[in-house]
Image (cartoon, rainbow, N blue to C red; front, top):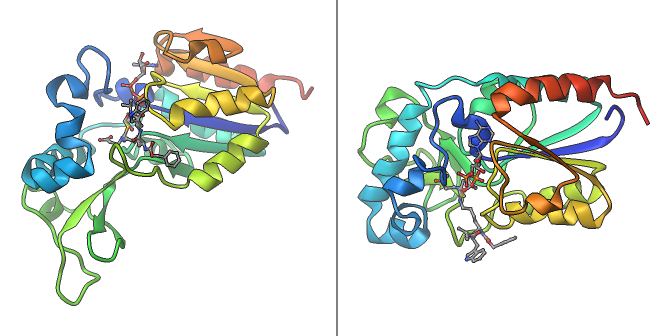
Length: 238
Ligand code: BV8
């Protein structure tokens, strides 16, 4: 894998062993909430207090969880490879806290908030920022309400031009911990495969798009990824 252009896409499964609920496993987040009630712009307009409480609860949880060996393994891979881009569907900060330097959050981030008036982002993780009270911005003359800096269903994911360019140019495409339910993230492996690129999956179980992968490693990311990363870094440069 040395010298190759490697793109990695992670999903909620890589944070599962850190104690962050995934979305679609049987104890998943979407079991307790309906997506349309908490993760759409319509929900935010209709019931901002419900949506705000849902995200404030997940923001508070960031203080209680730690990166797991899968996050650390991807940081080691980034250190060991010349060309690697980490794209994540996750909105937690465990990749950064696990040592990854360059992380593309295509679905936004929990630790930042966005001014509804200017679109300006602020890092807001002080204790006063984590109550269930709405928060206002520091960028407008008249402080405006801030929204979660999250890409909701029906909204355009972030950094898509860079993501498509990186996937189009990559030579190895690896997915870790995703069920392949959510578009356009779930489509990226098909783009890579159409380019004849080596596609690798690490997941607890076969996801919807399992047939798109050349190599499938079923298991817990925290258990299987560290060994895989050692093997990938030891691969002879083809
Ligand atoms: C867009 C932020 C246009 C919110 C998220 C009908 C059909 C198909 C598509 C659509 C449709 N109707 C609408 C759509 C489009 C829609 C969509 O895909 N809907 C789905 C539900 C059908 N998509 C959108 O609206 C997107 N926007 O399309 O805009 C566009 C397109 C292209 C270019 C420009 C414009 C916006 C989607 C973003 C939504 N926001 N997150 C929040 O977090 O609160 S998505 C949400 O799901 C999370 O980000 C999550 O990461 C993501 C994907 O889920 P996964 O990460 O895969 O998590 P999941 O729980 O599903 O799976 C976990 C996996 O891990 C499982 O397979 C499990 O086995 C495995 N696992 C568990 N434990 C472990 C493990 N693996 C390894 N180790 C373990 N220990």
